[in-house]
Length: 194
Image 1 (cartoon, rainbow, N blue to C red):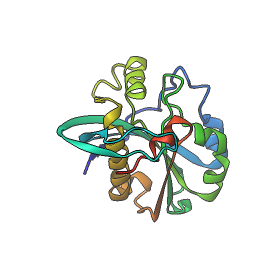
Image 2 (cartoon, helix red, strand yellow; image 1 turned 90 degrees about the horizontal axis):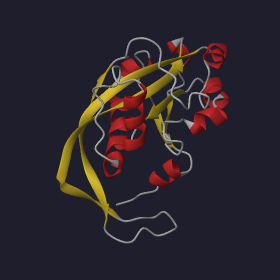
Image 3 (tube, rainbow, N blue to C red; image 1 turned 180 degrees about the horizontal axis):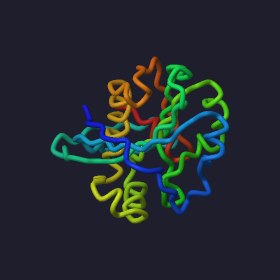
Image 4 (cartoon, helix red, strand yellow; image 1 turned 180 degrees about the vertical axis):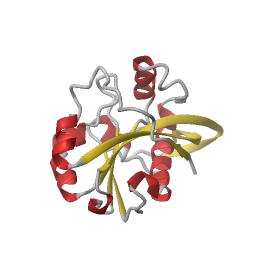
C-alpha cells in the first residue's frame, strides 16, 4: 500500500504544456479545487511474456527481482463543497505524448464529471512525466523517483489502492467507484492483462 503525503503547498504549477489544462476560471465556475499529492511505495517492473500484438491484449508478467522504491504525484480535482462529491472517482493515466503530463480526457470532457460532482485524479505514472516535472520545478519535485515505464503499470494500480484508502483526498468521504481512463498511448497501457 503506497503512502500519500500532501497536499503540496501552493497551487499546482503550470507546466510548459499548461495551455493543455483546465484553467482556474473553469474550476471556479464549477466549484472545484485542484490539489497535488505525492505517493510513494515499491513497485515491480512488468515484461512481455509474448509478442505485443496489435489488438492491445498483451501477455505480461512481473519481474520479481525488479522491486524498487518510487515516489510520484497525483493531481486531485474535487468539489470545494465535499457534500457535492458523487462518490465516483475518474482516474486518468497522464498522457506524456507532448513530453509532459497532460490530462487529455479531463481537458476534452471536464464538464461531465464536474457537473456530476465526481472527483477527478491524474496519475503521473510514466518516466517522461515525472522527469518533466522535476525539470519544470526541481525544488517542488526533488523527491520524485520514477524507475521507468515498465514500472508504470504497478504504480498506476497502486494509485488506485491509495485512492480507496485515503478518504482525506475527498473531503473525508470514501469513494464508491473508481473508473480508470486514458487517452491515446495512455489508454493502450490500460489494456494490458496478465
